[in-house]
Amino acid sequence: MAWERGIIIKSQAELEAMREAGRVNALALEATRRMIKPGVTTQEVDEVATETIREHGAKPAFLGVPGAYPYPATVTVSINDELVHGIPGKRKIKDGDIVSVDCGTILDGFVGDSAYSMGVGEITDEVKKLLEVTEKALYIGIEKLRVGYRVGDVGATIQQYVESFGYHVPREYTGHGIGRSMWEGPQVPNYGTAGRGIPLRAGMAIALEPMVLVGTPQTRVMADQWTVSSKDGSLTAHFEHSVAITQNGPMILTVP
Ligand code: MG
Ligand code: MG
Image (cartoon, rainbow, N blue to C red):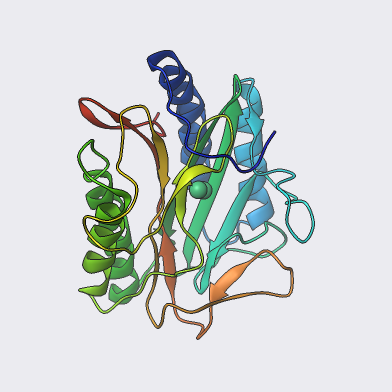
């Protein structure tokens, strides 16, 4: 599989195939959401996602993604200050944690990519607010995935909303086109200038993924060379859907 490609416009049939990959990806994430509670390890979360994907005759998309070393799991599980790309392992989820799970699924040659964050058990008002704002940022961004808007309109909408709460978006990690490859053009940052950037067209599919940091926009890559955390240790959250742009508006692909 090629990891990076330009913008590829999809046919109706191709978008329907992407919808199926997205559906399986959503089912895998739902299965993880149901089992996450204090005491569960991030490795166990990964196993549940893997089982669900395999049961549907699909394959994990993240496994083997090139990096400092090939990505070793089906999902990423990122906790609290960890923003994205946390590697599942022996770590136990605790009461009060923010757990962010990101998953990719390949079915019939197409990829679905989505993510959610959840609070575990008793969460603070601060955590609740962060989760609400980050999820809402995804949906107001999706509303801009329409013919007539540009990539900058999407980023500007997300950035302005997030920053209105005093939160921040990272600059180094962005949303992206998606299709037969997990990363296609265009790159879709969670920041930008309205009216600028590539015009959105029917047949594009975009993995839109607001990432939000409480403290500053700065991130750092941890010693495992995959996990990305907030530089100041502040809390973070991440939501993502793969979305098709159609003549009738945005169509979310990564729902059950
Ligand atoms: Mg993702
Ligand atoms: Mg993505």
